[in-house]
Length: 457
Image (tube, rainbow, N blue to C red; front, side, top):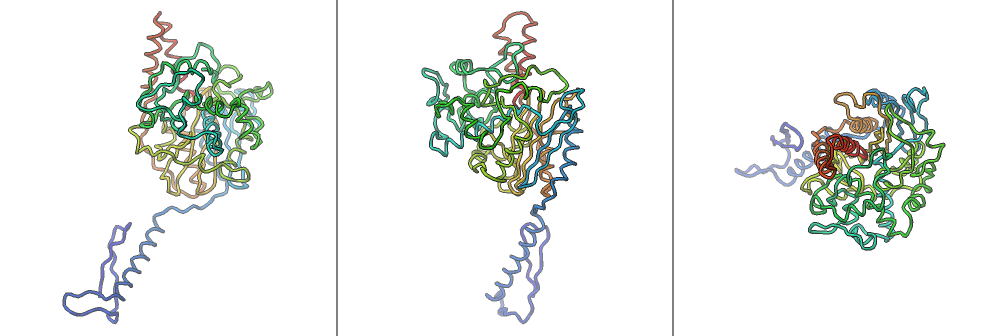
């Protein structure tokens, strides 16, 4: 007797031949008996398992030494002056430097080369936030107003801004407060007083929690709130709770002369190596590949301490928001965390957790793959052309290299919404309106605004 089975995940239908000696009711209009139905169900279950085994990717770990291929590809296609690549999986560590630390130096970047983390600074801020939440010192639904300076005005739009909304870019704030004065060093603007003064007259772009819009100033306000809640200066708080426990001795907002001497630089003048504590929540940290190796260990639990899952979990689904802007440099996010972005299906074996950064001549990236307990950090300095090769994306290429080392296929690419230029144009118009003067002044303001919008990806 022949029964036809439709197996989920298979394009064809399958016929199962049941021997005649099986117990089948032969009366007209009747079907198989209970014994035969059990056989059919077991067959269906077996075929479903076979189907799942053939379609679901399986992690197959490759030696981290194979990251040589990834590093060579990233360096060649980024057009960088210099590059460092760090990878960690358990006790395995991979490091390699490429190019030159400083143009013309013929010195390859090393584990002790100093670099700017740019917007990777944000995941240090949210690491602190998660720790203070675990301590009961703050709550994610606490309002920013609760930790604002006395008499400060914090705007609302149908709802107040919370700490979680600052950490997930859903507070409705602008990306930047405006244009830095001419020749202002990178990541030193705005200071504490200036951003709180700006906030008093700021208009929120949307009701907090309804959309996501990348904001640097939001993270500086978040660091202010954490310092206020802890009754401790933010830099001292970060040092005590994260940097010292992880032995990140060269990660700082206050580079000393030796660290500045070791700072990697690109092909273009990007201003002085100087104190960046004014942007301690968003983009100001300096670090080294050696320190970032320790941070990668922390992320994947390769030793103690290990980062709590709450610090890098999914807090929002983009599908539940009315829109998201500026969060997709490394791919369309499947989840939004506290500073982190999630790409790939959140429950899939290809799931990655990542953060992008850029500015002051650097592009930086960190990502880890929970299924293989492997993490990656890469930093490049600008080359003479300032651009990657056509069709190349450093962040996405890093993602796919990380997956390849786990024996997994690359993530499916999706078109990226390009809104930064539109935002820059709107900011430029506001700057020109405030600086009613000569056309030359307007052009200079526009150029500085474009520079600000590129910083802190």
